[in-house]
Amino acid sequence: MNQIIECVPNYSEGRDKEKMEKILDCFRGKDGVKLLDYSNDINHNRMVVTVVGEYEPLKNAVLESVGKAVELIDLNKHEGQHPRMGAVDVIPFIPIKNASMEECVALSKEVGEEIAKRYDFPVFLYEKSATAPHRENLAAIRKGEFEGMAEKIHEPEWHPDFGPEERHATAGTVAVGARMPLVAYNINLNTNRLDIANNIARKIRHINGGFRFVKAMGVDLADRGIVQVSINMTDFTKTALYRVFETVKFEAQRWGVTIAGSEIVGLVPMAAIVDTAEYYLGLENFSIDQVLESKL
Image (cartoon, rainbow, N blue to C red; front, side):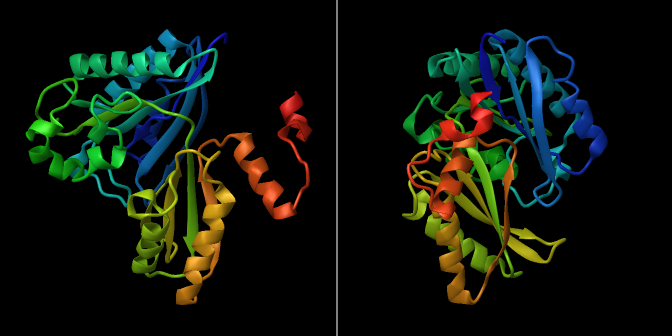
C-alpha cells in the first residue's frame, strides 16, 4: 500500500460469534484493505476491529461493515458494561503513512454522509471532524446511550450532522471522525467492588481533573468476580501508560486493593511499549531505534 489509513470501528456485539464473523468478512479478501486485528469482550459485549487501507478501498469496506451491523444488531436487545449508542458505535480514521489528518477528516465526512444516505442511520462527527466544540468529545455525544438518544437527538444542540433527526429504531446512532492513535488500556483490580473502580477512574480521567489525555470508567467483570478500570489513552506521547498504571496502583492501596493485571485491547504503537519498558527497566539513553523490529 502506498497510503495507509487506519480505522478502528467498534461494534456493539461481543458474544455472538456468527454475527461477528459476518461483520469481519466485510474486511477480508479486499484489495487495498488489510484486517490487522479484532478483539471481543463478553462483559463489554463489544468488538473492536483494527483495519488499514488506502482511501477508497477502506471507505468501501467500512461502509459495507456498517450495513452488515445495522442488519444484524438490535440494540433493544443489547446489554453490556461498555456505554454504547449504536450498532456501530464509533468509527475513527487515523493517518499512518502518506496520509494527513485533513485527508482523514475528509474521509470521515464522506463515510458519515454515505452511512446516512444508504442506511437512514443518524451520524455525529467527532474529534478532529467535529462541527462544533461540544461535539469533539465522544463521551459527550454518547451520554444517555441508545436509550437516551431517542429524546436527546431532538434537542437543537444534538441534531445529527448527517441523516434523520430520529434515532434508528434498532441501530441507534454512530459517531464518525478522525483522530490520533489511541491506546485502549484496561487495569483489573483484585476486588468485586465497582465503587472502587469508579472512584479510581474519576481520579485519573481528564474530565474530573486527572490526566489530560485519559478517559476512564469502572467496569464490572462479573464472570471473573473482579472489577476493571477501563481506560482510553488518547495521546500516549503526552500521558504515558506507566504513569497511569502507577497512579491506579497507588490509588487502589487506600482500599487495600492490588492490581490483578492489565490488558491492551487491539493494537498498540511500539513507542508506547518501549516508553514503558524504558521506565521500568531504568534504561539510560535508550531509543526506539535500538529495537530490532523497528529496523526491519
